[in-house]
Length: 171
Image (cartoon, rainbow, N blue to C red):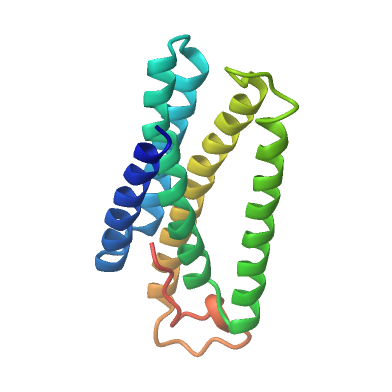
């Protein structure tokens, strides 16, 4: 019965990809999918029923799988010039790879089955961090776009890439 949560993740990923492509809502999607993931992990952590814990996977797995590409595209879109963009993408992939290694240890030898308490608590903390971090980034980008609109038409020296007044952050 491992396929249904991943099928749900596929469907949510397609929906969020469409929304992010059609509307400028990558930050909002990152926040919402992080909260969905958080709810799934909290239900998994607090429930003693195997059925409810299995049901929580329909929240946590789709939340993670929809969040990852959205965050990657948001990261690359809001970084310029190309050197800064390449560095931001590399750092994001390094962190996601470290997260995969960490989760293998946390859900393996460091936490005992079937509840995986330590691992799930860490996942709850990371999900909180993702939602708060995404909200802070969204607020920062909104503030910077507002400042840049005021600077339009001015000749500003030394501000290039994503700091340039002509660069608009994608929200």
